[in-house]
Image (cartoon, rainbow, N blue to C red; front, side, top):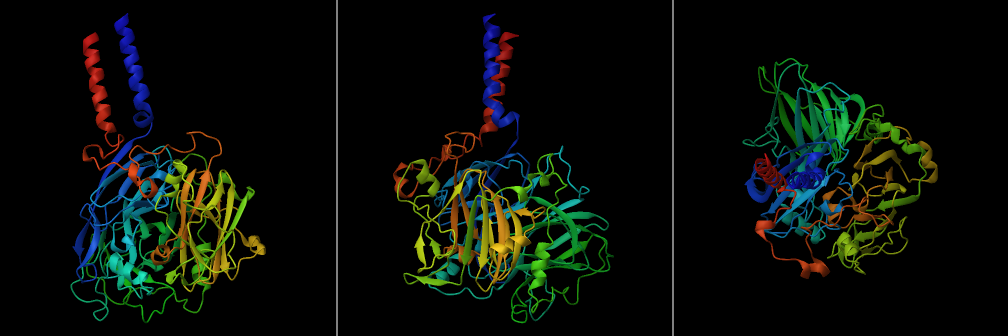
Length: 591
């Protein structure tokens, strides 16, 4: 009787210990070694940032509700943080990978991220968030698939293709950083890369010989899901495939009303996925093009990325002129109208069985309103800076989230102005105090001369309106209150505004920034602090055991212990196997 009791208690222990991590949702482990390699994407040897020896890095491919564990080994000569653009780390800004929430991973150290892609689907990407490092690489795709029991709102594609596009400089991120620190403009990029490679030689004058280009192999009659991410520095790009329709199906985690486009503007930091049917004849290969937008096209002709779409029965190389980009140099409304046409598919299921549109965002009362205005560069204390509402964000030496955890005073101020200040611009660590379960309206006003995209970590927001001119209270009459797309990044056209709505249901400290790297680096960002006034561990995960310490808490940091550098979650599968072996041993004793 006693032996049965011991056996029963042991099994109960096993069940209780393992069920939260292993019985409910799978754990998916990744090992990232981030290092420098030499590459020549535009024909000039340069230092780039690779992940596991590859530029771009590998694609993370997971399924809704998976626990994602990424052990990052920093082999750079400077600090590193990896962030997950558009991934909503539910209840866990500790894993966000930006300076306001995490201490950086020192050179030669490693650190393990662990988060759950809870109730999410879609196309995203990861990248290093510090020191302009994304301008040198370190990025890769991040796919979250539907669980098998949740249908997708289209026929299962015959293949999945990730395409990373972005402007590119032959100077590395440290040289670009020096230029910005000296108050210089970075000037025109040297080209546009597609999957880390330069342009196909469609023009012998504009494209030198010997540049490696990307080739994407497809089969005639098949339909592919093509996920396109603009991972570049600051240039909006128009994406198109010669003679092929792009059926937009999803944007950063939301299924869209399916519409055909001959081309689509994809702005810095944005991700979109298309269904593309290979319905053309195979007399030749076809061009895949990513070209700069809202620029002087005659000067920027060389800033064009060109890859090749090759049918398995292709009979020849692509030749002739590239497919035309939108001709709207003197019509500012084309791209905006295109953006307005992207709408949420409210009849489709997302990551859960209930229709997305059941959220009914248009009927929720707004509790907080912020009008955030950016301007061209300003000089503060002799330095060129970028601002929001006259504030240029100054990153604290002790991350905000860490300061909250240890109740440190004076690290930051919760006084970010809800409208532009009238005085002189200033540099401060000033953040927004968001109300837990509040509903925030943010109007992004772009008084600069170029397109800016804005991103909010930890959330998907509803893009409800955009127009040219100054936003006013009357502008709300133009809002889309039913099927505005929910996404994590939105464009704001020069001299225009974009309005977004955010449900503040995710506790933590979350970065709000421009995705234009040069402006972000110079301070065009802030944070939204969302705190549950009730003390509970149900709305935010506790500080992880492997948290790094820096700034005022730097003395708490222990030396790197390689043997225990990875978290218990990484070793969870080994632990589980050990427990199973113990169970087997117990069974053998009592049988």
